[in-house]
Length: 312
Image (cartoon, rainbow, N blue to C red; front, side):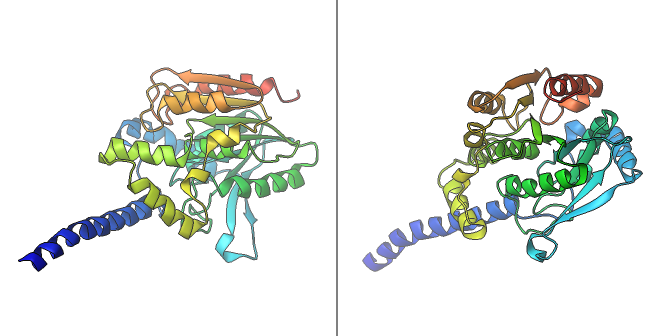
């Protein structure tokens, strides 16, 4: 009986530890592993479906070019769609898409900037769309990939290029993370719509909200898995720390009803940001809904911000 009791005593924590590891591995694969399709939008966004597909149809009718990075490195090959402006322009916006999306899912923003006279570059991030990569980096590796896209834009439009970095959700966090890099002078402004503070805080928040699970021990284990798979801990992936080094004018947009990336993350990012900064908290907008509520009003705010920092 004593022997069997010791086995039971030891077996329980071992079984619990094993179950936690298995659950953490499943969580990592669910959140970080690429999917080769775009998941359906949330139920509250279905009312915008017809408008969304009309923007996609518009994008597919444009005389677009396919750009690539890392051509000779299949494991790191990246693709983007480039839509030139109606008239020759030195202004280009690089649009960063959201989680498990791709460049095409940003067709509505491409349409808006195209009508404002911009060339538009729509990259597929690592682990998304037509780009290589088995895992999603949540903006961390992408921030450096986008330096390559910036170089291609400068080559395409000349040294007098004026470049805007724009992103929504994960894309918003991506351009926030880019703000801390050594950006060339051609990058004139950044617009971040509903970006998170860090992937560690976002994962912990969603674990609690969606799955009723605590941060510990799951987030540290997932971070360790990511260190093994991708080469960095989740604590490295921080918009806040990158924004502290920002020197470009930056415009933060966020829906005040966002429960996916909560508004306290907006305030934390805004407070951290160096350089000239502005903020627009959109009334009654949920996550990534600010454009859809009133596209004309959204364009008006974006245009007004950019006119302060780009040449006539």
